[in-house]
Image 1 (cartoon, rainbow, N blue to C red):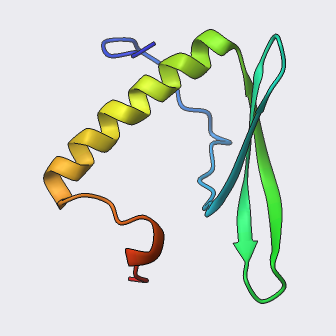
Image 2 (image 1 turned 135 degrees about the vertical axis):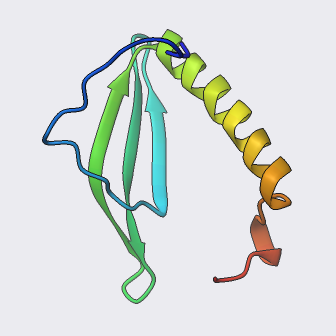
Image 3 (image 1 turned 45 degrees about the vertical axis):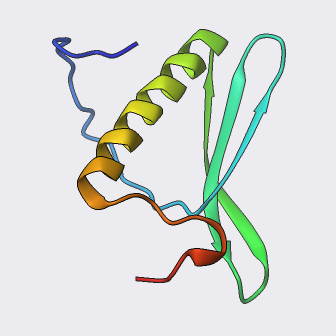
Length: 88
């Protein structure tokens, strides 16, 4: 569901939110993506956003993320995950 060439209007209420924690769930009809921030000092995640979408849209999102991550890794020498990860 790549919207290249599609025109769209950005809401004046659009806001950016930082997330370092997410959870994905689903049922027969929809996917749920919960985003939040994990605070190590109290070992709790505080959820702030829930996105609910159709399975079809979730599949398009997966492909879009895959393509974008491939371009990112090509430009910036990969993404560290797991134990080799360092804090910037």
